[in-house]
Image (cartoon, rainbow, N blue to C red; front, side, top):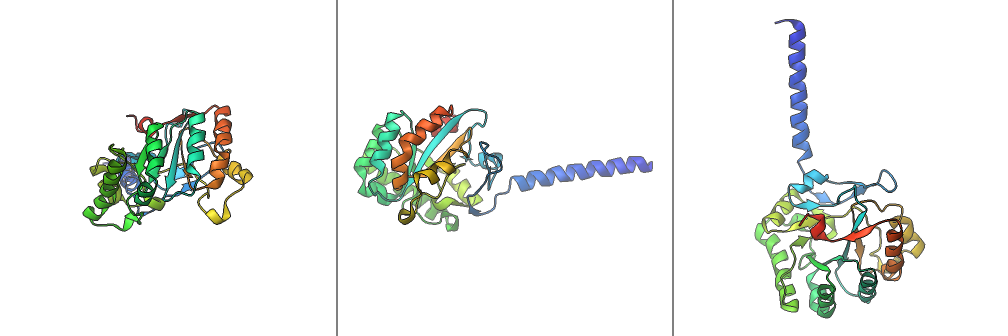
Length: 258
């Protein structure tokens, strides 16, 4: 065999090995906390895990980046008087959102939860007790956190909880995603958020807009907290500004092609 042929064969083997390793590493998810890296204003950020990596577990953090659609999501562990105004703003804009709730919230604020349902919003599973789910290695313990919230939601609303799950604090593992999928859940991360959860140091309107307007992007899954007084004050204006930029508001069913 000629030297040139041997070199070509070795090169081909190298390429094949590189592709195989690339596939292996790209499909492997590390345990950690969800994070984002913004590279360009108005463009989708890079997540801790990629779109295709998450897709195999029925998980997503981003929608179609070719369409100017925003998926609004709110996390809530308790109620402090802001949610009703947030619901009013959403109703004014005929925008549907997803509210990821914990057990304490549903137990103490059943009327607000029923309003969310009546207004056509999605209520998602944020677990019963808001633990670090990535540390739950036992399948039954993981299942119990989701199942107990399902039972409580059914008790308070008479309806079945939609199968959407958001890990508390964005903490996840590959095994968690597998277990959620086995339970029929779709895991929802996010592609835009800002520090809105600290009640003793709420951002100003200007600070909020400085984060939420330049970083909005097609297919954005936006995470806001319904405990934020700033969000309650600015949501009507924020939705108006996004609409003026050409965006519309989609649902999680649309995000996952249901």
